[in-house]
Image (cartoon, rainbow, N blue to C red; front, top):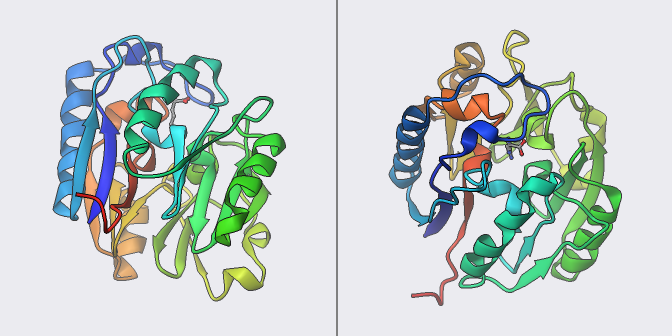
Length: 264
Ligand code: CIR
């Protein structure tokens, strides 16, 4: 059983952080409807959705991915790079504490979960505007005991590492080659992983949420979707236009992890 932690879209989402996008009006009701459809997609793919209460004063709190890294053995609560997002951690930590032992990133470390791409036992961490080397070192020392390798990689031109690269199948990564370098992901620990490039006309198309063998994927990238389907990757398409205006995507709206076998 997979658990997917989500959080209702905040009524203050119009005041969200924006780094690479200009502010445009967000339709709150539509954002909430789209978020419900996203949660339905998670349910259809076998997740039990655990919804956290809305945080009316925290505009970006729907983007729960940034607040934790959840592994089978533990969860690490981040210290988000944007100061406005740091109060989001308390309630996520309380919920995750029901499922995992917790570790914490501390100052001067800053880390957003959107910068962490796990492939098997390797965690790639994007050194974006949100995540720094101090956090990489802390993350490494928190999880090395479980046999994970933590590797910092350069990312430029986008908000997070997973804006530029995400996993779409056991052995395939979807990538925007303008924002990350394939060579950074090489090495013996990376085995025979293949790169699939996005359609160049769809810069934001590299973020997908892999659940088992299917991906949840925005409707707004039809060209890249065609590339994915040609590879035989099952796509569950969701319209997330309003969350995209807040610089969100599909990985960022959930924390998906295995329920421990011993949990009720
Ligand atoms: C932010 O700038 O923090 C939010 N407006 C968007 C966060 C999106 N998070 C993600 O893709 N992991």
